[in-house]
Figure (cartoon, rainbow, N blue to C red):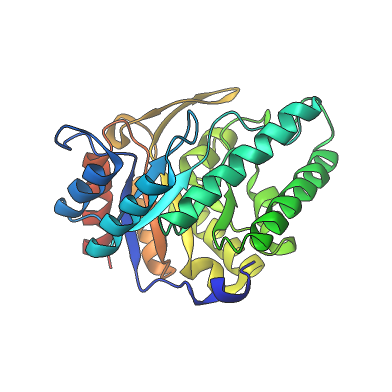
Length: 287
């Protein structure tokens, strides 16, 4: 659920962006030049990828924020992959929390809308026990950010493998129970994890659950990931371009339109801006 001033951070539409610097960005390919290129393409935002570590200093983060603000671009951030809040090794849990905090601090500096990350693995422990562990650590992270007056929404992501913490129900329950936590709905992961959630009615069911758990605010301030997806019995294998996959993205866009969903949709397809622009075109013509 949102905290205090976060309730004011609402969207008037659904924006589309890329997971990282668009491929057609001219050299040098920096975060700033990526934002400029995404804007030139007519997209509304970009996700800053810290997946291999948070390597952006204060000065650069301020410059990134200025570039985005001048162009009216919304930014999000993806935290490092090396996060497991359910690790049995205390030092790994401490390091995981620091990586999430580092992502949030830098995102706050560049005016980021929200951050997302992969929260945990079950590690053969009971899901309810893992839920309690993740909830406790996220509550501590939110508390630290409150002390620092860093206003960034923390968004654990729906994950694509059954070995990973992050079912739809787990993520929405966390968001309902912990102020400052909201969902990152990765529809490709949800499909890969379950083999389902690939029809208009199923997409609508997800959006209905968001509304039921989080109210209209949840649908007005979404952080969505979409891509094609390759998957098997153990869930996600790798991302694909939309038209190379079995993912029914046109039906998803129709469901988002019909539910008047707002926020930002980040395309994680390998071709980045091509599929982001494809999704945006479908969205605008299906309204």
